[in-house]
Image 1 (cartoon, helix red, strand yellow):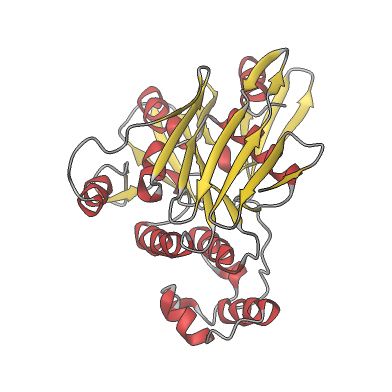
Image 2 (image 1 turned 30 degrees about the horizontal axis):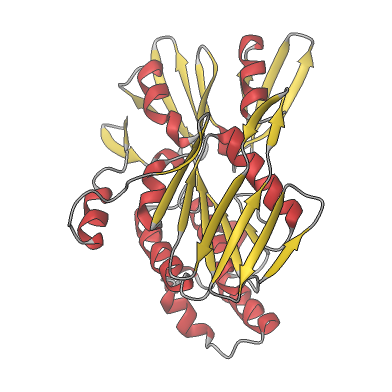
Length: 330
């Protein structure tokens, strides 16, 4: 048995190639334990999910990044945006020495319709799917994925699910998420990390086959109903940039466009909290996954700059500033 460790809060104990024990030491914030000591065995053919709030999830990511032996996938993972999709796949095959045919990969990942398009010109959800595909080429034996399904549409989620299932026979996979439903898509074991520590959830409480459970989950995926030009348009929560209340009307902002919604801000806040949304102002709810910068204008004036196609800034009230800092461990 071999132990990998350094001065970070994280280490791995490996038993050959079949399993690893992940050890993360306590993480403190303001004198209180944010993340307790964690010992978790990760095996091949078994995808592990850890559900935690944004704050604890980031602490886990920081520990794993510092340890350095795992491949870490996050929304901020860099990409070769000037390449076309096909060029990127050719490049990844070349640097990994794979003999896999690029056309077979394009078919495998369902990329036929976008293979000749530059990545920077793709919709953001498809850019995220291309980033996720890169885990397929990772040389590390353990892969940690933060919110792998968060930005994907239903079709890409199904493909991503199949890719991760296949990859789990070769790599040890850990999914970190704030949303239990996303963990249920792929994970064979799910743990919840909260004030009481790390506890395994009982996710299968019947004799129903896994395939039936997955089919049922598809119907539980939240959709936000909006209207524009007399058309009803449904959005997955990850697609939404931010929400605002203007003179009593609720507007959902997606990709530089806005859509009216019949729900109240309070109802939307409750419905979207588990997806990483934050009530940053009495009139605004923001998708924290898309926040790039906290802007300080004056001592009492703040805003959030979003990392979306169209540069957007939303107000951050002084009363909510500390809540956001605590949430993001700032």
